[in-house]
Amino acid sequence: MNRFSTRFAASGNRPNCGACIAAWSLLLLTGPALALDAPLSADTHISTVLPTNNFGAVTTLNVGTGATALLRFDLSTLPAATAADKLVKASLKLYVNRVGTAGAIEVQTVNSAWAESTVTAGNAPATSGAGSGPTVAVNAAGQYVTVDLTAQVKSWITNPGTNFGLALSPALSAPGTVAFFDSKENTSTAHVATLDLTLADQGPRGQQGLKGDTGAQGPKGDPGPAGPVGATGATGATGATGATGPRGLTGATGPTGATGPAGPVNVQYVRSTTTLPGGNQGSRFANCPAGKVVIAGGCGHRDFNTAALDIIINYSGPNPSNPSTQWRCILDNKSSDGRAVEAWAVCVSASSVTGP
Image 1 (cartoon, rainbow, N blue to C red):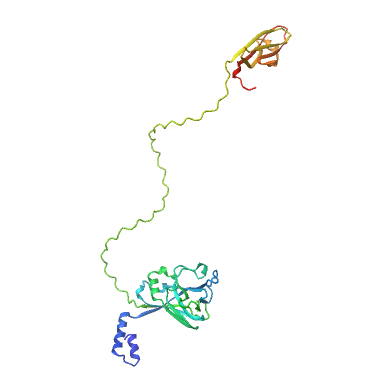
Image 2: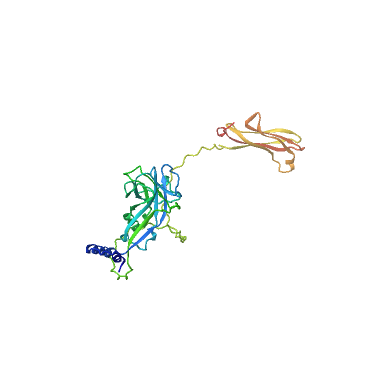
């Protein structure tokens, strides 16, 4: 005899037929149930009055006067492959430590990650917002209040990645509510918040069914993202020389260069040869013709023998008294014999000479 029927037999009262049928129908529909508690993995509260403070180690969860409590439960204790439709009921139980202002609280869902040791009002996670969750009255201390969260826990079972926990705040109908609940850090009472789960018995595992027919091919998926750039390949062999390209267009004419200095015009060499008696000193001149000026000149002798050692050139340059047209040589014949000496000038047209 099963437990359900034994409970009736032990009572000593025979149930009426209608109650018996109803009870057996419920047993056949639901079967035996499995009760579990989801462990509380994190709890704290945040305060807009102290927006940079963290309260992860505080022994109470404060709600009201700018405070919001945060809780998160670990659903990994559920049997493997538990489906949402196997959850019969999920109940949140909170122990009321004390009440500042009686009223009601609302249980919202948290939509983003947070950490008990670092969360503050300044970095608070997003929630489902005021008016989005179930409410429960909070009127007196020293007792538990219970909130049905079956629908929310089913959603977490279906989408485990969305389980960021719960947020407790004053209900819209009672915004002045102030209440304090025991946190898991309150070791003196051990009234930690619990999430009680009731699962329908899933029964023994059945035999594996037959392999089904191959389904129809699904639609073509969207192109995947581009892969990373591959490594640079080895340098290829040098290709053959290409054909000579067509001749390029003639470039533009460059700017005209600066005018250079005028070169000598009508250069003429003038030479004057005379005999300088032995033991004498004298001047010899080379004169440029009319219209020309002297630009260079020189002095020397004509004898190709040791006479070169006898002729001393004391001066060779433009004649100071007529420097533009006359070259002057002052010579000294140290020998006792007459020597052939000469003066010569380089003459150019006066119009081709610039400068002083």
